Length: 152
Image (cartoon, rainbow, N blue to C red; front, top):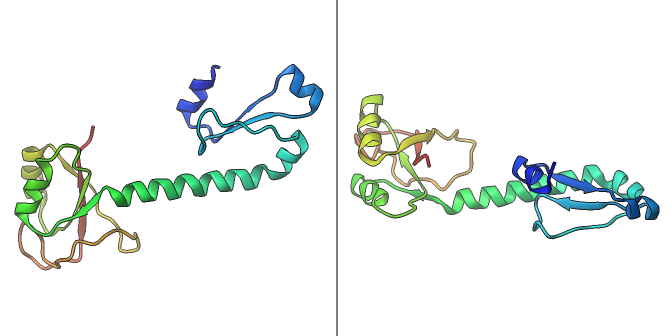
């Protein structure tokens, strides 16, 4: 299979071994968390001993990168006016609101802006918080937050 196929599949480590690599006992290693052109050429035995640490490092790098991306693209919102204005933007990202609405109210907003509630974050999830304790739509007191977004 070609290199790009493995990149598209999300393989964390790609290893290439050619005839010269066999002679020198080295391998070509490419990591998912580094640029496509970045290559390392460790000795085979050294790579085998450190593979677990490399996978842990890749995991933490990708998780940190994804978490930062998520947090940078979430906008807290507490008012209906700000809610409507948010969806008029190009590439609006996600919107975090206090939520005490029902399925019918969600459906109206969803159709109006071509959005859906993507998730109801657990309290244990660290996200920027919408400041109000009242639903932006119904004005009912709530501790529930809804993360709204578009599906592309």
